[in-house]
Image (cartoon, rainbow, N blue to C red; front, top):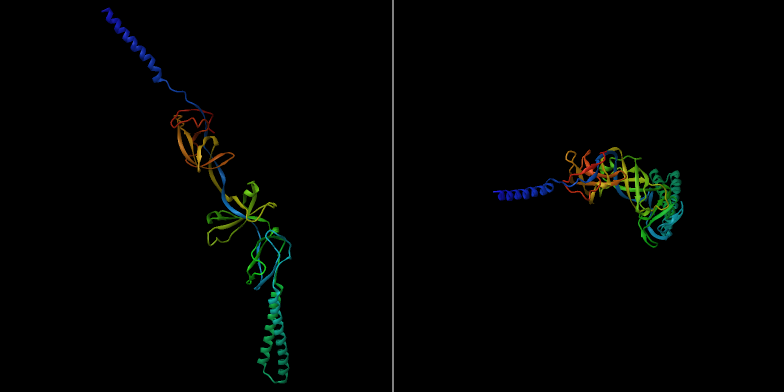
Length: 349
């Protein structure tokens, strides 16, 4: 009897010993990691309109001849600096001079006919209508002479003001029609602008005078302060966009045709932007990223996908996936897992 009790007692001791060793593994839990948290904040910002355009002189003029002819001389080349009144091109004067001589000869004939008709009218040999026809022929001849003189005077192209040659569109010896562009001149005194095509919705949100920030790759993408000085009165028939001109400060590095980006402040409009610390967002790609949202009651973190915009000095702008006032983890995000319990550090701001 005593021997059986000892055996049973040993078995009980073994059972109790086994239970005692298993209990800490079942009831024990890993220590919650300490993680800094922050509150998703919102701030009112001015509405910004983004656009890309090209640099140009505010006044760029296409120059051509007022009459058809063969180009005899063309001295201006792309990039040349010209002064006001400088002769840049000229037509062959043979045709123009012949037209002027023809007009003068016709006027002489008409003047002689008018004098003769006047004398005959005084003697009663002709009627008044014939005298009036002679007078009309003289007036028409005078007009032809004036037109021929104008064509002769404009058989050359002179620079309308000091500027730079932006394009040479013809060559000596080429026959051009009246009004065909031969040169494009930009007036440096008019200043440089950035021409930005915008949609009708964006253009309607702007007024002349609103500020803009321009960056040009050719100038190291350094921010340049500008302002809107002109908004097109109608949209382009091909694209439906409205051209907005932004005045640029004088800089010798500016050239027509440079590509620039502009951030234009919409007049009197604000948007609510959600901002989070840059350390809270991870695995960012193509305008999306991930954050860990902290549950206030359980202190558990939940993985959430968010859409993000550009980074600013105050953090990263979030455009979707978060609400104002939510808590997010801002440290050790690479060690967290969905559903993990954390020990928050710091007071939410």
